[in-house]
Figure 1 (tube, rainbow, N blue to C red):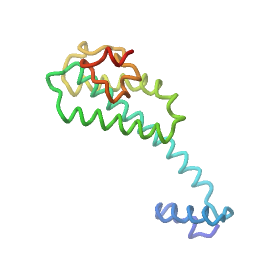
Figure 2: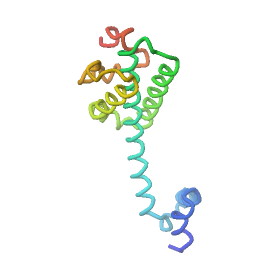
Figure 3: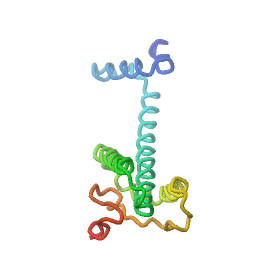
Figure 4: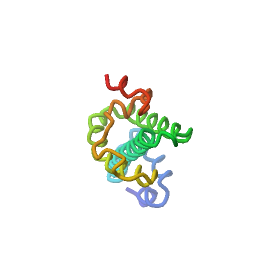
Length: 155
């Protein structure tokens, strides 16, 4: 592979990506930078998984705040909950094979969400349950709002 194609990855990722796409479109497979393509694909998968985890932690944090500090519910909290749900739903739509991992992401993310909720609300830790009070279905359900319709969402 010539030096120009090899260095573009390190010097200009956009230029390198466009070049790789063009090589794929023109079926010039022998010129592809396979090692870096593989690396980028692996990175993208890790990034998408981290994005789902980050969104779930933020969503659970806000659901906890919504449930255990209802006097402080704001339009900002509501927008955040809606935004996280939409982003998670969009990622799962694009990558349905990620859906089976959601239970684990919720289980692993809840302690972080709990810590964040305690920090953000400044309520005593004992205010919140040590175990996640929400089902995955409730967490992702755009019609579920803690303290308002929990019974309906559980059925």
